[in-house]
Image (cartoon, rainbow, N blue to C red; front, side, top):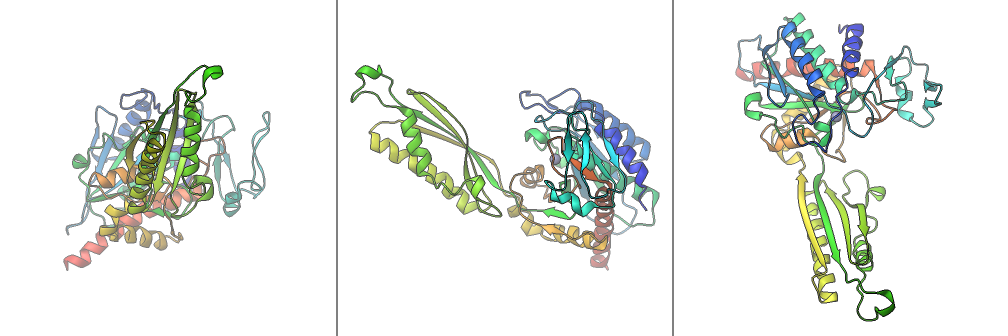
Length: 417
Ligand SMILES: [Zn+2]
């Protein structure tokens, strides 16, 4: 049995440490304060008796749990991140523990009238009777992804305390700066040395993800010609009208607010302009690689058409790929997803397998040679004051980690026979 109180204490000790990352900074970690938790984790790992505990100059923490079986088992890994989003304050996190949740409104902050209500957040209903950890309404919680760290730490402790559970070598890594898209950037995949891994960074209990968007960012610059409005006839070219043409020539219903599931989109995230020059910022997303390429081409073609129409180079487009769908890297080793699914079922968690409408560090790691599906960490409504996590979900995630370790060993024992 996993000790519930110890798990809660561990989680709270982590969320109380402010580890907000900063996209404006170019160093790794992006903020000095991330070292506080990274160093604490190193100490705890050593105390637990984990092997090869290291922290590098970029604050990536790695450690090993050696195999306790004689037969050959592939080295597997578990990964989570210790930074929290720059979008919301992570200073002085003051978690509230609601025991035996009654299914009603949770008052997060009486003074400011901030309420976590199942009328608005229906997901709460499924946790009736469970222990829920919330914020006090003034900060985020940091379950993203300190729940993941708690689960990995607790699972390793559990395996150490229960040597009768057979497993191969397990590698773990805690990274900085995931929330600013750089969690995988300085990840030393070779040093990690695992054949595959799982990020413990999903949301609700049961989530298992191995598909994400292909992603690109586009900057569209449109050039006009500014002339005194009183003398502008046949001379002025207003870049804002050209921008309007550009925007309305892209499919209006292929936008985030009109799409779901595996449907891709163009998202105009920002525009700024005047007569002389207008800049449009787009993100392009699609799970399907061919559709993704077609979207980029559609945009470039449109730019060319407009230039021809105006008989001048008035549209300049720069498109940069951001990340790719990990499915391409995971599908050839689909057994690693099947293993996670089997582990969930073994601990009575119903797997929810769906494509992520976003990206994960696991996607980048998959392209760096470490196939890395994503497993639930249990929290809900990340990146804001309504973030919460049911303790029972964290316990389930911990059990899933233990089970994956056990099943991997079992699978290769059979294969070796
Ligand atoms: Zn996360």
